Image (cartoon, rainbow, N blue to C red):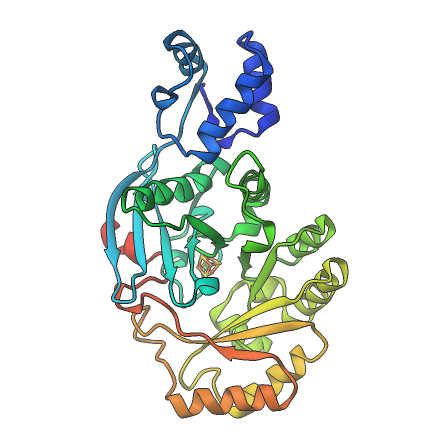
Length: 351
Ligand code: SF4
């Protein structure tokens, strides 16, 4: 089977070039074409001879994504649905932040799996079950493909921030996610600082510990969504395996090992987890963890079962947290008019 160049590290490309009896500098050039310039075909390499390109193409290929559909939100957010080579579908979401020069950025929310086994109650991806892990090349292809669209549009900014928050639980595809992060960080590749990369997890405790031990500068975001086991287990089955107490120990370990502030995500759902009492219990849970919590009024398009609380309730909830010394803010989801929450577009097209 042909190797996928987008899944290959510089070392692996060097080995390939040695097998093909080519000098080492060719490996660097090939790596740049693949991981920096994001070419979609070996044919596009302009400084290799036809013979060399044919020799590489006999042994390797470039994973490409096939755009099935896209939706553009009023706020400029773009959601893409891509078909993989095996005809499975994945989504990614481009968020274009504009405004002052220093705040201007393009952030891409990428998928790490086809489907997801975690079954969170508010998530369209979870409803469809798990199909398979993405390779590192398939994860990176989302970034390279969107960058190629941005180049066509003459956008002066490429994707500079990545969030592993699309379809799938990234910590359950640990090796491929880490490999893709290391490749994004390569000087000869995208050269994206690891500090600009966020992994979002529903709380896979042993993997949080493994990630802590690697001591990378990744931003880790943990989806909490409820302050008690009784409530959390209702919407997040993972809580039965890794309840809040165990999750808290892992979070404290992560902060201690990495000295980095954790991010928590809390989707506020009307009459479910949004009372002042919930906020006090949450404040107590968070008080020993160096963290920031994002309160996200739930996207009402996910399912009618989950409605967003009224503005005054959201403000009261925030007030309880901040007055208890917890760093918290309200984060409005982007692209709500195009159902940008993960899995929704795929769900519609597959239906
Ligand atoms: S929210 Fe994330 S972890 Fe939960 S089911 Fe959806 S994709 Fe999986």
